[in-house]
Length: 300
Image 1 (cartoon, rainbow, N blue to C red):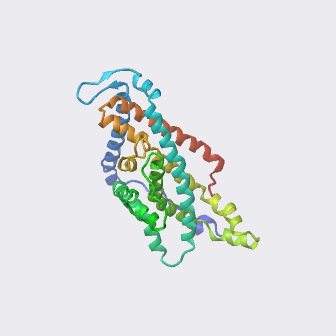
Image 2 (cartoon, helix red, strand yellow):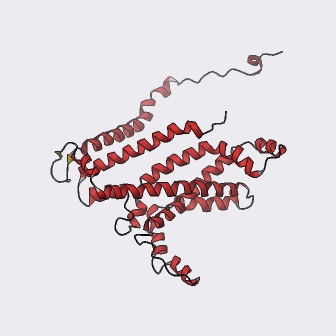
Image 3 (cartoon, rainbow, N blue to C red):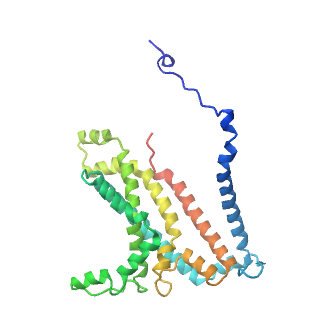
């Protein structure tokens, strides 16, 4: 019997030729410069949080005064509550709706490319353009209230303090659910069909197949969607900057950082707020990386 080495040639690892090796520093230069700029900006921003600077005079060292002020800043806690609500509403909604749309798309044979393009189109549009579209929809005399009036229902003040944040959440879900659906669709297409054929022979129902095959094998995709979704939701800015609700009803951490930096010219305090946001992002991401061991299933 022929051995494995006789039937299959052994591939040797490729080596970088001397002529190509001299170009490696040139190729690595943009990446190196980018990393240096990123880390320098992060360290400089953190150091700026310990100063009082208005962009005109020289920065003055104030120690931890800016960070102490955050704890007593009522508007910051309002921004934090609104941001947490955006995370708690939009991320699960995009996961649930996106997964449902992906399952429907996986069963559609005709016009599947058209539906995929239609789902991804809102994601490819500018946040500002999408926000201005929803400004028109949420106008008291806009399209949504026109539809409600045609149905004999009363008009709704979409951007009132009671409804503004919900309106922003709806816009965020609409704009991001298509991207999530395409990610889940890619995950569904990577699941071997043999698993479903074997389960059908065992008499498993569609619901049982979903919980025993589909969902466990989609947990890596779900984990990626949740992590990136939480990071994006914590940094919500463009939507609430255009759809600004009254009485801080749509104030988020990012919009508050922008306000204090470029309206109040309190660069030191805004840097401290940015450091606090980075801490929240690192904590949330680290917690998810730790908990993934308990629910994420990787196929071997």
